[in-house]
Length: 184
Image (cartoon, rainbow, N blue to C red; front, side, top):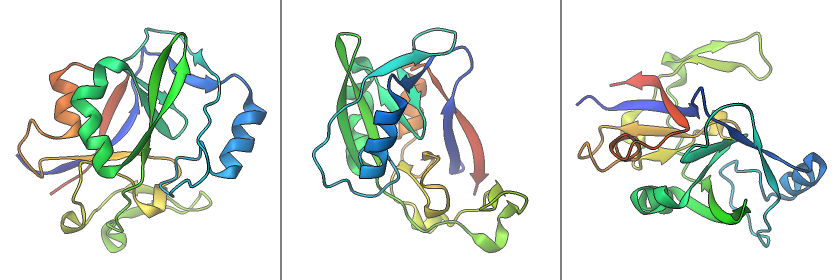
């Protein structure tokens, strides 16, 4: 299989999460908690109250702004990939706990010379990704250029069934899709 890189996005037909109190969320984000930008948070983690947003079914993997939160049934199959690349934090939600994923592995792997940018945005956004394969070691990652908005995953670096995307597909986890960005 040819290694491929994907952006993790919300799947159509599923709900996402939003803060109950937007001001509290913004305050904690400014403090570093709830930013999920790939930078280490050194303060004491405190959850915020979340609510369902949108129409559709409840997913196994929830999307929230620039991160994902996973349900208990997805912890065992996906926990290794999260632990390799960052942290996860418990978030109470409707009488159970979800795990908020904080991906901190952010290799400088964007091949700027071979990527295409949309200069009409500020800062310019990436239209077509070209990535240096040799700089990506783990299944889940962020890149410095989009660290505040995206979680990426690579498929095909190791055995097909031992990466984040293949585990999501194997267990038929719902709520996210994988948008192809680059192939080698």
